[in-house]
Image 1 (cartoon, rainbow, N blue to C red):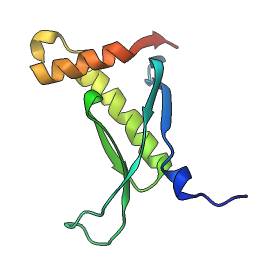
Image 2 (cartoon, rainbow, N blue to C red):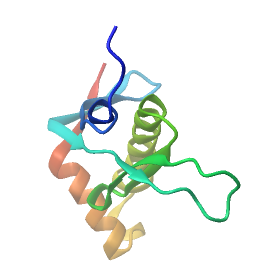
Image 3 (cartoon, helix red, strand yellow):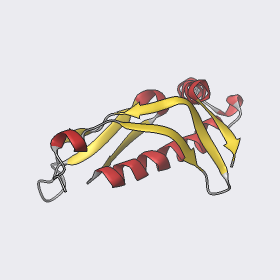
Length: 114
């Protein structure tokens, strides 16, 4: 078995879909490609561990984690949260900034049943 390299850790994620618990799925029209980067440790926290992060402001994704698997789980969680928080809301309840996030999601994804 080959050891995991820096290239492996920082390889882009391709996300085609994110399932809800209710059997519905957010399906992207094309893969959402997110590239992790190293984030320096938080100077306000003990230790000197670096974290992986993914930032995609157009879709309000800004998450970090200690490893790739955890990072992907947080990305999925953030997408689901954002879908509920922005896409499911009536436009009249959204600010111009959050309305832009809503329509950015609608331009790249839709919800499908199972």
